[in-house]
Length: 405
Image 1: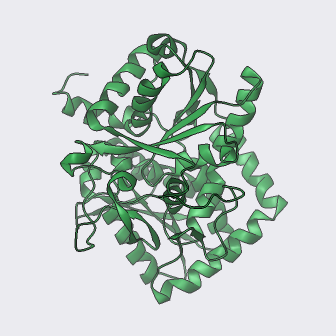
Image 2: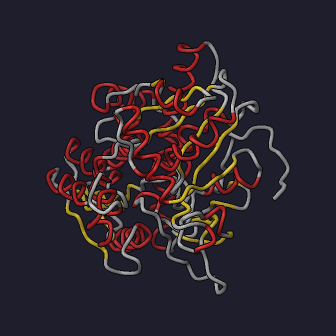
């Protein structure tokens, strides 16, 4: 789709929360006052130096930022071609990028006087981050998680419970992330006064896609500074996995107006795009409305949402953040896809060559880096967002491989 190029790729959304035809807020009438209250509270907090200063202190002292930028020397030598760097979001407190956004939202909940926080989670990392920050700030926490994901992400369920959160298994639909988000939205409508809904990705009604992006952009901001310090120049390409897409937009956004930088988002192709068993909403979907925003969705001929599939619980979602949908339309970001098998191969290679066990989510990004890097010259600088650590996935990988890692 050819759409006129904007003057800047970093100015969106508009005042109604739209990125081109995507985004907006399609919510029940009872939720509109809450959405508008959140939008106003976030606008005030964003312009409050005290809020930003407190957040920076927590990011440094509690989360452990900045996360390192690591040159993957053995992987680079193995692949040939481009020099591959990892942005080590797996080293944050709680083990993923999710905590960057959750910190901002929980501080906002506290500022708004909301004593109860709800969240949805797939792989469990957003749930763990929400439970962690609720414990730190003394807020009640309820996490909705699909029953299938409860089974395949049991270590994270135990972590959330240890942190004092109530984990509510969701038994409707495919019992995965989409269904968990449905239940969280139902809870929010029912408990409007006391409850803050902490969304984990760049989806949902405006202002969530913008707000989550802003909180996650620290990833790209740090990467810019770290690459300049390490190499004297900016990277030539960026690669990140895409479910809803918060880790990806966090890396991409500070670089969107650098036309010389190639940017790749990697969706989950599951058993292959032709199989229909995948979670590649951009490659295999079309525009529709889900969870309060318009974006690319996996739908059948009647417009019903199809069930997504990925070996990775965090990418197992039938939609994508609206800003990613727009970046695809304006052709600023190229969206690729990696199958379950490709992700597993990357998972094993990274673990053996670098001594870093990646989550299955960024293993999809690594799979495409393994394809792209050999075709680039040796002076090419490639950054892969290693958005989470893989200890949560060991049981799933072992089961898939017949019990042997």
